[in-house]
Image 1 (spheres, rainbow, N blue to C red):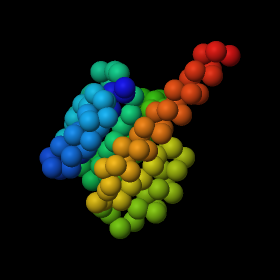
Image 2: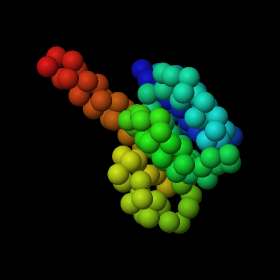
Image 3: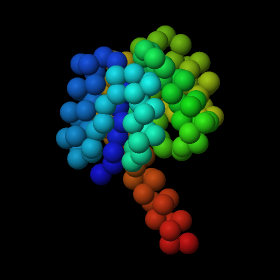
Image 4: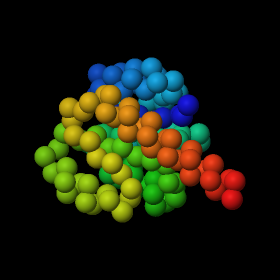
Length: 131
């Protein structure tokens, strides 16, 4: 299974996501803010990022812009938001290949999207390694 980084400043939401992802067999690393998330990504091994938008010390948008820009990583990202401007956020980050989910979110839907994305990546990597 995958190593998934959950960047979320709400401890309850963090526990809920970690529980669901661990139940699916994933390794979960946690960051309470964007700065800590950057450090964990730089340490290596993260294969998927689930991040909140509103966090201290570096919000989710800044985190994704850093991830895609300066860090030059293409790992999949799901962003969670309770903000009312989710459509604009989605448009702003569309070129960054980010899926935006509203809060409150469905843990099963989130988990299913992660599983589907990881399966697609495995298929694509298998094709490129074979070719």
